[in-house]
Image (cartoon, rainbow, N blue to C red; front, side, top):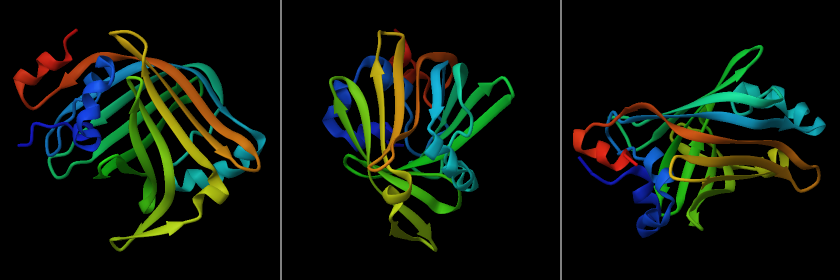
Length: 214
């Protein structure tokens, strides 16, 4: 089994420049049953009036959070797979009206590039970099995977550009923010929060738990 984590392979030597808490919550190895959970609170979950018009379309693909709110508790579950090098996310937003699950999976493509997929093969190509100890994702285009082929689609024209960052706060917590901005309509979606590594962590190799200790 390859001992390198998924993002260690994507980032190369820059993996070692990430903040410790960032590396700890991405300590997932390819082709394993590794599991990690982080828990926190979204300070804000917001969409604009224009963004609201896109929510029905986004919901078909499971690509957007349809509600607004402040101080929303959230758990994020990260799973590896024994079958591939993907990372699988289940983000559980705990709104007053009930839990909302935003699920996706991320497939490493090459150095500094991954594709995040939602339902029906809809995906977004992301450039991944380390910047000042933070993990930064910037979109480089949208695709639709049909019958094993990745077809470029004009997603930026409809959905806008995506920016995501995960930045260390201290040894135990990190901040996260996501925004989708359109060249004509400005920022349409955003959310941000602070997270800690939860107690529920499972790694394939017992020895690997040393990497998760403070």
